[in-house]
Length: 112
Length: 113
Image (cartoon, rainbow over all chains, first blue to last red; front, side, top):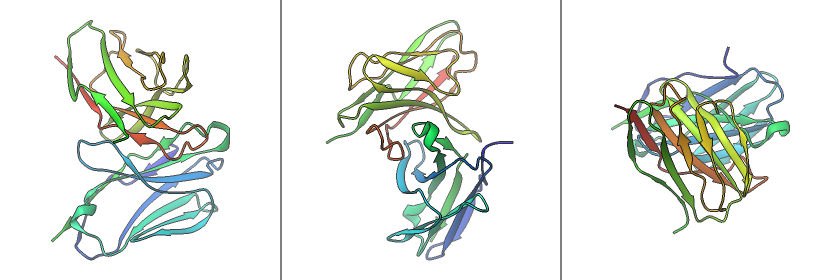
């Protein structure tokens, strides 16, 4: 079983929809949670990170962490075609903070 | 412009050949990383370095080697011992202690002839 599970998609939504992307994890030591966005044939870029349970908002993006359920989510409001990309969750714990464990990524397609 | 550059964009390897992937950054970051990305497997850490002349193995270091002679540069050599080298290779850097904020390069796609 992988430490981090992420549905690969693809997930197709119409423009303006609210998107929910999710990851589950098995290692209860994970404390730091990140979401990266990766456009096709490009390197990932950090969208958001959090190190506590609860919600963190940045513009149209909201990251949610539920440590009791070992579940994290990224919500995208008012989705745009430019949001079409692969979204990767990543996690680390204090003992090996420099080593990120990535999910496989969910491919999102926002259609006009 | 500050950032990370990787070259070449595409690289072809013949059987038994060693190849070296270049990674350069001008972000003044101490930490640098190499990841491998395969379809359906996400990113896996090959090697990382937190300071010049020091580096540690990641989860899949076998068949790879690195050097860190300069702060700005962290080249990765894919040796002939790596039997399945076809993948997308990503280099990243960060400030030591800000591991969550890793800046990635554009990647090198390695193909075997």
